[in-house]
Length: 376
Image (cartoon, rainbow, N blue to C red):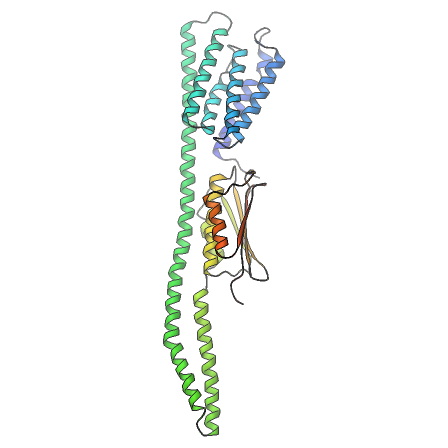
């Protein structure tokens, strides 16, 4: 079951408070207090709820989100104006000011606050009975401060959330760089050892083989027999040295440990790494999969709505081709648009002769395929 974060919890709590303010109105409003028929007011309330959902669920700074916010603001004003002077109904306007910070920039919030304040002025002027001007000014000032304060708190929470997200992304990048840096050091050391083996032993064995080849043509049957055996041993030893040198050159770090190191750097997201036992990756493939994992984790932290879990699996087929599949449990992202991060995944896969695909219909999924390169 998906867990709600602090922002989702606070947003739902605020929405429940607003509903607690709206729902009782038809039952407590005095006859003739409403300026519109009860059915119309209820329809306005339902439309306000729908508009709020559109503004919340659509990506920020998009046309749909702005339309939802505009409708939500106008409908909240209509609800307050058509039942003037009743209870805490103006809380809807405070909620709208806070919501606007999630939809657009500061200037949008300023427009919403001004519109809400004007709606309050109209509501107070239409309120039944004589209301002292000082009370109107005091109430307007109070609700203006509440709007500005709630918008400021919301903006601060979002700024802190962005900072936490960037810090998490930086941790993932640092972990990936550390894994690849350690492997680069080990690869350099393996290369040095392989060169020394080849230079110091390989050349000597080559000379030995040539010498034995020459001795094999000398007279003497017994000597020729020993020389033949020595030549065979020398050739086998030379083959073993060359095989060891090749293995040192291509040996990669443990893929499971490398990917787990990147995953463990993201405390805000539970990442499960599953690497099949038959997976064998060389240095270039390991480096590519580490970078792909970094981009996948970064994308989930930055863009996956309400995602708490990311599952990552790596499998191999009979030809040694590797397939990495990653899927988070966030909300559907709809059509996939390739940004720098996703384009980087495609480029890394294609650079090794592979490919990458994406799917946003259920959470967000990435599949990267790399052809087999390790000889059996």
